[in-house]
Image (cartoon, rainbow, N blue to C red):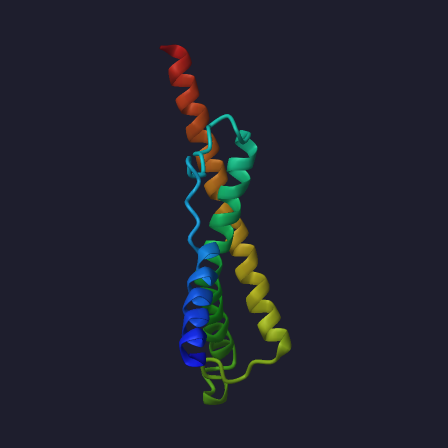
Length: 130
């Protein structure tokens, strides 16, 4: 008798404990809306593109700066094997490599900004003429 009562309580408890987990979805699901072109100003789009290009080009410019710096140090020291690629780096060398990579990345992003701005102005000028 006690065993049957225990099983009945256990089954009913486990069934009722699942009730809060079985909720119905809301009648109208909350979906994100697409951004409209007027939602952000043009300078915000340009700034975002500048940021993406600068950060995206950094790994490539870091690699190139590292290779160029190592080869130039190797060449300046008369191709001494003790100055081979990446063997004689200290904190100052790493700072020079990182600084040059950041500068080149910013130059690339600035050139991209100038090109896009000139293309946009040219397209606006053509639409005004028509």
